[in-house]
Length: 316
Image (cartoon, rainbow, N blue to C red; front, top):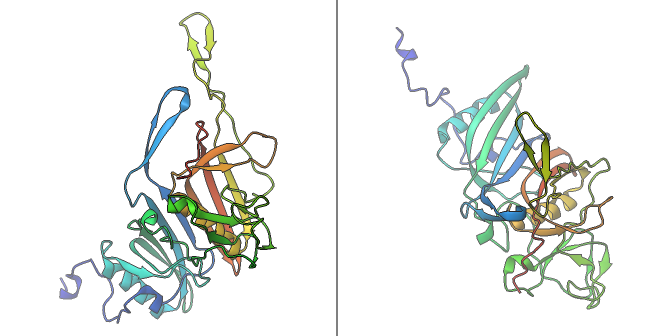
């Protein structure tokens, strides 16, 4: 057997000079995607009420499925770089060129190389970020790259701007989201009588949203006999919601991503379903997915879980 065949398969490429971070090789292209998911313990009680407790400070994780278009040399460097990290060494990477996300550290769990044609390779990689305690970084967030700004009077604000106003004891509850273009004044401030700011999830989804309501009655099926139906709980018509947002701008996306990251996958918020239903709801969002389409165009899908208790903690 040739000696060259006997080597540690931790690394399949030699003779490549590796940069200090993956951004020194290439940055992901459009079509890349990231999925956020929160890990929590949920304990259901009577009347479909429940307690929801995040598993840890790092309960919100992100899985980036990124794609690089490179030549053969670039494909070699990317493959060697990912293998060199061995799935347990942190790698610093920039998910995109549009400034939606911060430069962060994660772990490459998987990569694949697709030979497209001469000197055109597509390298796909899954990078997991699971050490990002968002709730400790309340002012700057761990993922969303949005400048921290306080509300000021006589300032021109645009719809979807985000400001901080130190009203509540819990700092996480002091962010407000602009509902329309305006010049600020005391009347339209976050606490003004004609406020142009909201802490509700007011972002309008695409037309065609669908929901499914299961009436949770108890059904007793007696053997070789009849079926009996009973109502033994309240809140039997609670339901979850899923929304899709297509081709939204970077500005709107960053506002929505900030809102969701601020909630950490378990904190509640108020939401009015935009059609048919005329009673307000309280939800939490345990997962959402962002896809880069092209310049200043993004898709976002969100999943909301209803909390029938109907309480949004304010920290006041």
